[in-house]
Structures are given as C-alpha cells and as structure tokens.
View 1 (cartoon, one colour):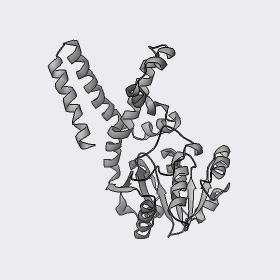
View 2 (cartoon, one colour):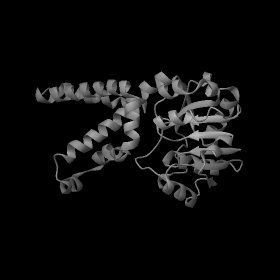
View 3 (cartoon, helix red, strand yellow):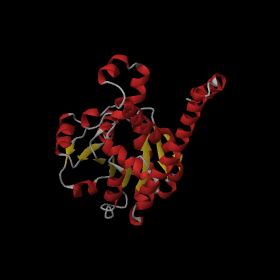
View 4 (cartoon, one colour):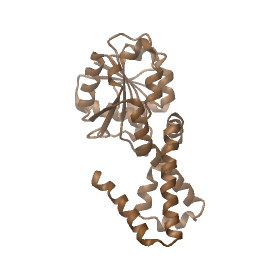
Length: 276
C-alpha cells in the first residue's frame, strides 16, 4: 500500500517512523515544499522516498496531510481528481473549516482527524517513533467518509496504536480551544510577561520545574500556532475570556486578602487531577 505523507515535520515524520515500525506492507512517499526537510527526511529514514512532483502523491492509496490548516484546505482543492478508492486523511488542529471546505466530489475520500499529541519541537529532526502510541486520535464527521476510507483509516490508526475518539467537527473545535489552543496562548503570555520584567540571568538562576513545565510549549512554532489561532478564532476567544475571568477572580481574592476563599478556589482546581 502506497502512503503519501504531505509535510515531513514532527507529525509527518513521526507518522512515517510509526508506520515503518508497524508493518512492512506500507511504501512511504514523502512530499514537502522545504528542500532541507526533504533531505533530512531521507537521511533520517522517515520515508522510503521523497518526490518533487505533487501529482505523484495523487496516485497513492492513502494521502495523509500533516500540514497547517490553511495548507490542508488549499491542498484539498488540488485532489479532486484522485481515484474513488483513495483515502485522504488530514491531521489539522481545527476541524470545522476543513470539513466544510472539502470539495463535495471527494468528500467521501476524506477522513478528518486530529491526533492529540505533539511536542514543542518541529521539523524532521523532531520526529518520534512513539509520538502517536496510546495518544488520542479524534475523528470528526466520520459519517461523511466513505465506508472503504473509514476501514483504511481505522486500520492505519490501529497500526500506530492510537486511541480513537469520535465527535463532530464543531464540538471538537470548542473542546480543543479549551484543552489545547488556550493553554498555548497562556504559555506565550507567561513567557512574554516574564521576559519583559526579569533579567535573563535571573530567569536562568531561579526558574524551577513549575515555570519550565508551564513555559515549555511557548517554544512551539509561531507559524503553526498563528494558523491554528486564526482558524479557531471564535472558540479561542471564548476560552481566553473564561481563563481571564479566573485570573481576575484570583487577583481580587489576593487583593482583598480573602485567603479562605482563595484556598477553596485552589482546591476546586485540584479536582482536575481526579479526572486526568
């Protein structure tokens, strides 16, 4: 089975490694607009071959789009002439706009998914063989995918040992805003607030595990996250508003020296770990 991976960074490269480990039945063909990514992907054995002509990707049995959301939407318009049996999977971080933008002539070819995994690193060198292992793979609007495409995608996700969750795209985008997208905004805000107040030497000397853990994702690619924030703007703004309300409450409790109420507020937050 020929699998074309479009985008050879963290997500695409890790998919290549995971599929190579899972089975020898897959022939992995990579495509990326970045020449250095192409060379690195071959050197790191993330795929079996890299091609320069995008039309070759169209002949694959499976096409996986591990590129930014805007690029997924644009690329979908170029895939209207694929074979009816072709399975196209996208790994976009927001789903409703992608799902709605897929040309109707190939809507059954598409399986829209979002792997809830990643690191702050990017590029082919960031690829990790076990990135998808035991991580949630959200599959959206599965009823719009063809039966053959569903079977192929579910088998592929089983091979990389992902845990499957099904929901509609609108629901996914709201949940993702609170659980993934807003925390990235908070991390960027935390990093900027500290950098604007503290001497870098003091940060290095005093930053402990808590700060390091919270600020880690502020190292994530601005190019990628600008795209995600733009595509999920309304849901992200709702989640930031909710977060700001909690921060303002915390500030008022401290200003008014309401320590018992502050303690109760913190205790309510502790309940999150009962769920996780």
